[in-house]
Each structure stands twice: as C-alpha cells, then as structure tokens.
Image (cartoon, rainbow, N blue to C red; front, top):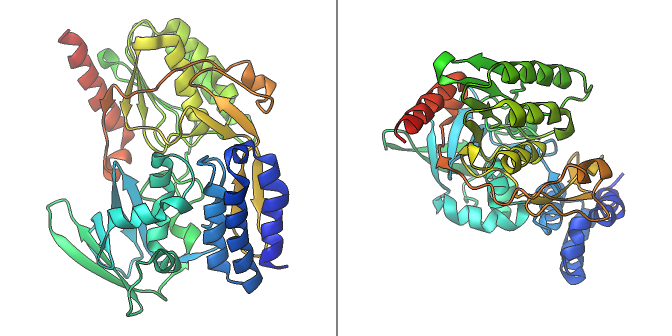
Length: 396
C-alpha cells in the first residue's frame, strides 16, 4: 500500500460523491491535487496529510474534511477553543505548567498562526476554532506553517486567570498519538476521552423551570436514544407551565429524526419560555434540532451561548474513508441541507426533505461563554441560566 492509494481513495470516492465540490473551480482543485500527489509519491506522510486537509477544505463545508488525529503524533498538551481564545487545559503528568490562555507559540502571536492555518481547516469560523487547536501541538504542522523554532523545542506562552505569563518549552520529539488528546469528534471537554453516559439528563428546578441536557444524537443501535427521548417527552408534557431549558452544547449531532417526538412535545406543550444553550461544539443534527424549534416557536425560543459550529446551509450524510497507509480518516458529504431558506435539491434525502423548514437566522439572544471547568458541571450552569431568565422575565 502507498500514500498514492490513499489519495486515489479520496479522488475516486470523496470528490465525485460530494456535491460541495461542484462550486469549486477545477483549476483550484487540480492545483491542490497536484501538491498532494507530489507528497504522496515522495512518501511524506505528514506533508501528504496537510495537503489533503487543504484539498478537502476547499468547499468550506465542515462535514467534508480529512481528520489526521489517528495518524499523527502531537506534543502531550491539550488545547481547546473557549470563546474566541485557545485555552491550555491539560498536559502529560510530567509537564508542570499553569493552565490558561495560549498567547503565542515560538514567539508568534496566536492570531497570526490561526490566520495562516485557516486554509487547511474546513468549515465555518467556529468549526475551524473547534478542529484547529490540534495544529498547535503538531510540530510538523507548525513547521509547515512557518512557525517552528530552531532549537528542537516548541515554546508556548500562556497567561493564567490572574494575568501572569509563563513560558512552557517542550522537546519536539516528546510526542504522543494525536487521538490521545484530540478526539475525532472534538467536544471541548477537558478530558479528551469524554463520552456521554446517557442521552438525556433531566432536572426539575421547581419554580425556576425544567432543564434537559442532550449531549448527543448519535446512537449506533438506535435503541437507547429513542427511549431517552420518550422519557424527555413525558417530562415536557407534564411540565407545560415551566420555563424549559434545553442544553445541546457539545452535541456533535447524529440522527435528528429520532428526536422529532421531543420537538413535537416542546412545540405543543411548552406554554412558557424555551431557552436553548448552544456553543461552537453544537453541530449537524443538533443544529437542525434547534432550527426546527426556532421555526416553530419563533420569539418564544431564546438562544444563549455562542455561535454554533455550522451554518444552516451545509452538506452532510456521506460516509467515512479509512486511509490505510497514512492512518487518517476522510469524512465526505453526499447531501445538501438548507435550513435557512427551507430549500432542497436532488441530493437531499426524501426523509430529510420532508422535514426541512426555513428557520432563517439563528441569532443569539445572549452570548454566554463558560470556561471548561464550568462546563464540567452543567447542572450548576443550568440553575444560573434559569435564575437569570427568571429575573429577566420578572423585570418586564
């Protein structure tokens, strides 16, 4: 097997299937293919991966991208985007350094690195913020982008919550497998191995309202999620006189069709305000969930948090390619979604086309960004948000 065969998989399956490439000029695609092919023929794995990332990022469709996490080694540092900053939130046990906001790498401002890296990252600005931090811990990527050091180490400048600046140096050969610190479906939690234990977490805050956390809509067996949704439906129908808080932060998607009974229950039973917590780690089916509710509830639905990870017009479905030589994964799309205007085309699956509605723009009613430490205790945040909303309503 060779890297050329990895490239052929991309060219024979992903590009012809993915309708998002129809909008890109052939000359631009061919230029990226030529560069990727050159690195493949040289057997330069990391160079091949970055070039393939650039190729698959051309349509600006975050559902289509090369995921290098399983194929690369990174410095044992975990960086996560929080709001518009990048936070250093975890490291290997032997690395002692204060956690905080990443300011610079090898003397270069983070903003400069992010601007240079942009063409290698797929999707919206928020999607780039989600998937981009792995490049900061990948020595080869820093070198390719022009931000490496000359001494065999990488130096990070970090500012803690008290404003103190610390410099952290890590030897470039001190690496671990990328997937140890950067999961394929980045969720933004401090623990990279985090997975939702349950599909629905419900808490009754009495006079404040009812909170429902929905961490994921991905259920491979399609058994546990429908049961959890049914339980949530019962609670919503029994609590029609309460303010309802729905938390889909960190929900990277799955099958929104399985959540339609809950959407129906909220639309039909919620007599008071419905509040939705969202963030940049809210993707795909979770955004569709929000879009349908916004269309049905209008101003009764309040969005709190930060801009979500995808736009309302995107390409999805498709599949995965496991590139056996490089070890990377390619995610490609096959279907058009337009939840902004409610339109479809010949690639939109009929079962989805029947549900598509014109949700318009999902503008935030209140920006509310929490640090990772707070996100690990969501019910406390739910209480705070419900109290805040209660005061807001009382003041009207």
